Length: 482
Image 1 (cartoon, rainbow, N blue to C red):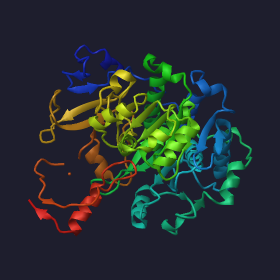
Image 2 (image 1 turned 30 degrees about the horizontal axis):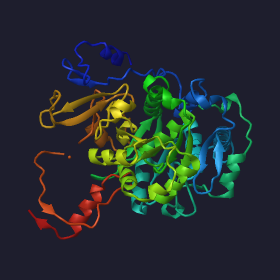
Image 3 (image 1 turned 90 degrees about the vertical axis):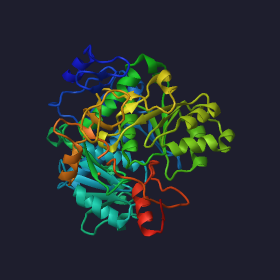
Image 4 (image 1 turned 135 degrees about the vertical axis):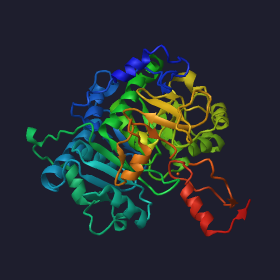
């Protein structure tokens, strides 16, 4: 942190873009955000709850009446007090009664569709120092075997509809079983001996990369990584004059994001730290989404670009009262300038805050803050707080000045620990100084040699193009030579 603060005072840093001509490093132009000392034990849960209970958070005094989670399909709600009670009950049950062998630094594999049980499960496990490793429930058994080989879980949580995909030798807790529901209501006496001290450097989650360019990797993200990301969001909303007007309005978010993806994962924790209400949807449906915005007075939706396109093109939107909606947060894939401009014409009262991140950066790299930055359509904003960047020539390894094209390298407290079970990939992606190389096996000599025509482009739930599936299609079908 001291290095970042000194960089802010460095006179050789260009105030227009944060570039330092001496070090050839781009620095964030946002004020550095204070983080707890690394020596201080903190899980991302304890940190998020410390922000939730802060007097700065508007809902801190009304946790018994403020809804945290709302099921869009059933209308079932959990207040913050109910949620925290279930988190504590489940954590106590897992530690003291049902699974005393589940220990700190173990990994729990999670294979389930979205439900109100998932946030409770995440927070319970994280508070115990157990790393969570959620996967896409639509993954094939062979894909799951590969992921489990990487993360080496001690236990799995799933539902009766998906548990059959998991290896038979892995203990499984069914989230839709009477046993699990009883664990949410248990009253287990606690003592100071039951408190688990979680280090910020401990792994909080193993999230799986999208696998768009090759084999899926398990990204190890620490509690410190997520603390850095959440601290930036909190500071921006409650310590920044630009967003103080928005902070006065109780935010109601609608999640169409998959909770196993880094975008949904950190946005869930963010919502809890901010004291917001969160409406959870199951399988995405535009009509049901619009109904939920009207019914629950949604103010904010984190989205992937295809949803922005769908809203801009659909005639259904005029049939619903969307006046509560103030902003969309777009991430997971690029959002074109033209799409943003057409969206603002149709929804002049809704701002689009675009951002850029990777699973390897806990989702945070750059984001737009405030109305002036939001107006720069097609831009993902400025470097996040406490983040540094370099543009590197992939052939020479030389750091490049502004205006030059090269590979983006990133460094900061949000950068991953490494890839689970893959030391070679970790060494190739993270250098000895902590720089994350974002475009590693990309060489200038590679050229397009064949063309294949497809009916549609395969995409992940987060809106990313699945290049691996395109490659498999090209290898298994005839294509035209160029």
